[in-house]
Length: 320
Image 1: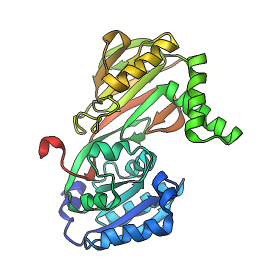
Image 2: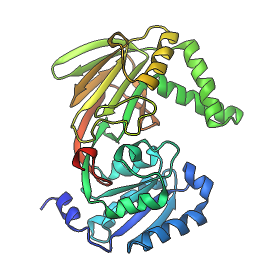
Image 3: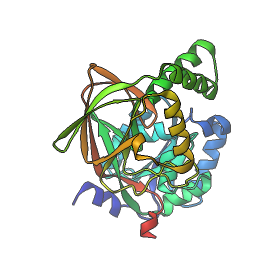
Image 4: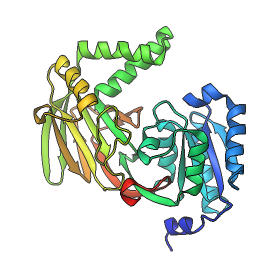
C-alpha cells in the first residue's frame, strides 16, 4: 500500500495532529502566543482532536516540520497543520510534498493566498472545523532547482522590489508597505529587464522581459476574485512572460490585470507546460517562490509535481 493511501486510511475520529504555528506571522503578532494557544487548543479539543501546538519561527520551522514528518511516518501523528502565511506554508509543504502525510492550513498570515485558493475559511475556529471535517484531497505543487513551491515563482521586478524593500527597512526602519511603495517607484525609474531563454518540450524561445511568472496551474488575476486559481490539480505549469519595454506601459498593464484580468495578447505570452528550463547570461538569479526570495544558480529547472500534496481542506468546487 502506498504512503498516501496509508495516511488517508488512518484519519479516524480522534485525529492526532501537530500544529506548527509561525509566532512571527501577522495574525500571531496581533493575537499574541498565549491567546492564540488558548484559542487553538480549545478549537481542536471541542472537536475531539489531540493536538500538539508548537510555536516557532524562522529556520526552526523547517526543523519542526521534519520532526513532525518523522513522527507521522512512525504512526504517532495523523496530520501536520501549519499556521502562518504563504511563506510558512511553503516551508512545511516542501517537507511534506510526496510523502502522503496530510497537511492542514490555518490562515494566520497577511495574504494567505494558498489557504484562500483551497477554500479555507479565514476565521480561525471555522478553519479548524474545515481541517478536522475534510477528507484529504490531492493538489499539485511544483519545484525549481529542487525547491518546492505551492503558489508561484517569479523572476524579474518582483524579487528586485522585495530585495530593495528589505534594504530600506533595515537601513531606515520603514514599515513593510511604505518600503515597498518606494521600491516600486525605484523599479519604475530603473525598470530592470532580464535576457532569458525558456526551453520546454523541444523548443527554445529568447526574451527580454521585466517579469516571468510561473504558476502552479492556471491563475485568474482579477484583484477581487475570491478563488484565484482555476483548479489546483491540473498538472501543469502556467508561464506568463511580460513583453513590456517601458515602465509606464508595464504599470498600466499591472493595473488592468488587477481589475480586468489578463487581456491584450500583445502585452504578454502564456505557455502551459509540465516542465521548463530558464537560461540566463548570468550564473545566479534572484528567484521568488511563494514570496520568499533566494539566489539560485542558472539554469533554473522548473517542473510540476502532480498531486504531490494531500491537504485537509473543503472539496474543490467541481467536486461539490
